[in-house]
Image (tube, rainbow, N blue to C red; front, side, top):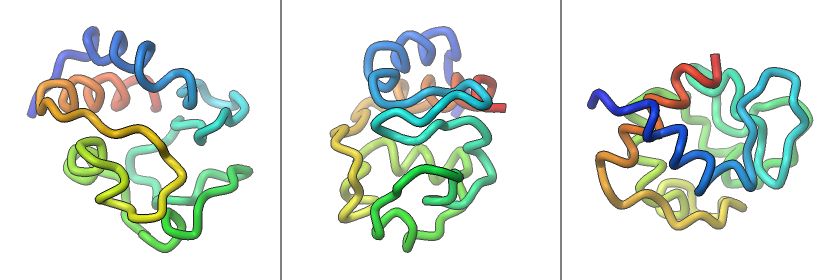
Length: 105
């Protein structure tokens, strides 16, 4: 499951950064700030208006949970506000996770 964080950064910039930020203290955008994501419960970033579906999911974000979620967010959390269709390629999901593991600490 080891991914390429450099490629993950490129994918994040082109497919995620329009809605998300990773920097500590940065304001939420259309989507929540992802800083501190791993180990956090879904729907719990302070100050962001999550969908009821995301708040109710109550998943703790781990590599494995994120891998499944990023393939098809609407299938993983029916009713989510996230409009992104997902990363179908396993390598892309692994790369994004590798990037996020470092960028969201």
